[in-house]
Image 1 (cartoon, rainbow over the protein chains, first blue to last red):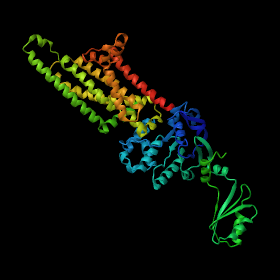
Image 2 (image 1 turned 60 degrees about the vertical axis):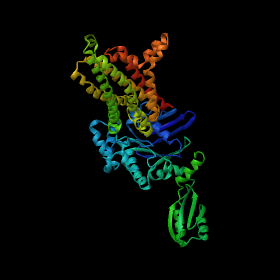
Image 3 (image 1 turned 90 degrees about the vertical axis):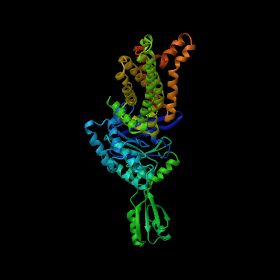
Image 4 (image 1 turned 120 degrees about the vertical axis):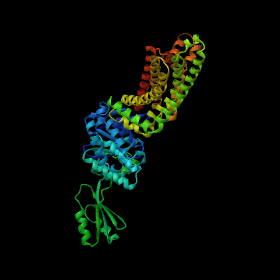
Length: 309
Length: 255
């Protein structure tokens, strides 16, 4: 749905985005993840037609954003980093104005406004002036603005920035609920946002692609080990050595009453053997969970070092 | 066309839902009323004196003695108030970040600019219309010629349109409204009095400076003389201002 090929954007001598390529499949939520000043906003601004690119290609749906900007804009809903609100308008008045500039046919304007109000939960503030509503509601108005013309693609630049934890959860749920009808790309520098809301991610740093793919692909590409974390009631040094004796186990690390047991990726699943051992030796199994190295390690590694692949 | 109108409507609503339009129109009308009253009062005095002198009485002309100087005075007031009307048009969008919304919507930059231009023209027209009602009183109590008055108002409107285009241009340059207003004001003043420099300049420069001056083209219109050259001057001035605005906005995307 979104295809970016060899995109480069320079501001004078500063290269904000360098030879960036990625694609986002239809009907998915994709995160554009990177530290501050990684080029996330620039990438989104190019995709939405706000900025031109120095080099490269980008298309949204069937339209090239440089060749057919108006067609592309019609199928994109965009929430910029600073929510573009007119403080002196009412929520509904603002949304009506948006239907006009987004070319919603006259007959469908009312319906579009009502649908956006409903989907984003703005019913209670619909008649209020935008300057008088809370930060969380402003963010919702921003999202309502982005989806009012029922675009195929939603591009959200840091949709949860500056919100309190409860509002963040609300907005994340809202974004997830929009997945049914829209392909979504959201940028963030917060990792949990990606692991909790997204199906996949494009990770960039200093304008360059570091990794991209679905969350499973990303973690898989990083891990060469499989493993589990065991929590035992009767934890002791002997347990560790017993675990280590299981054929195939490469390493056992103990942290309090938790043991991280690792084995080479792609080998047989050793979980059956481990369970059997724990039960036989009566070690008191409290918990066993997959120790798939999380995307957090990947992200930290990427941000501090070079590309993973 | 429809898009342009959407933008214009939004701007007109913004003018009238904040104090801007009301304050500007009120101040304009108070000043216009004051000038008008003073000129009529002076004309009355002259008329009293003329009553004793039949030759002098023939020279009395309300178009020449009231309307022409009034239009000149009003042009200065427009120069003061129009920068205040136009300063926010693009500066504010840029500062608040709504510019990003407009430029990522499926409407052209030209439509956005023309919509904003139209909205400011609307406020200008409202000011001139209300002033027209005020000065219309002379028709109830005297017998001025109508055509020169209408041409004078047309002149004010055209000059105002050129002022607005300049204001929009400076508004597109900066996100600071005060800076936009001051630059507009300075530029307009310079163009208004450019013919002063023509007195001392010689040859080709003299006619160039004269041609560029707002005043030079306004004189004829205040006296009811409709000259295509003047109309073309104001129209091209407005067009040029809007064209530059378009270039500024487009070039910013490429930086």
